[in-house]
Image (tube, rainbow, N blue to C red; front, side):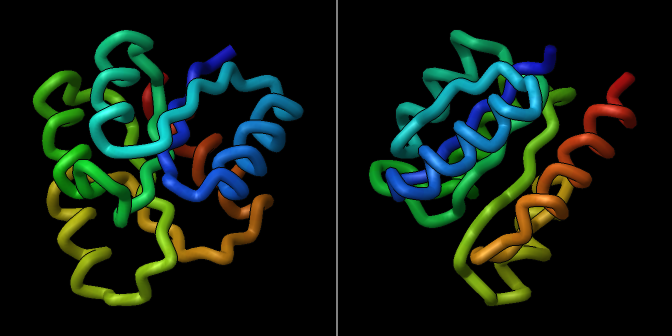
Length: 121
């Protein structure tokens, strides 16, 4: 079972993704802000991180940079309400695997997550 860190400051999204991924047999760890996300990534060593871009205390892009410094192999998928393509391109250039815009299709999210995990093996 792969461990996934879900980092989002919206408790509704956080709970939705946690329940959805647990039903798909992932081990899920959650974080409610950027600082918490970095700490959980350091402690829990997830295979994949679903990371919101706009969070309190540290932005998702700052978290992405720090996670990349901790572990170059962890897969990071940005999940955000931001529709600015420049932000998405920036996240991809910083090492994110994909950029998914909210509201998202859970089936598509599951496919991206599965694909990233397959590429890691």
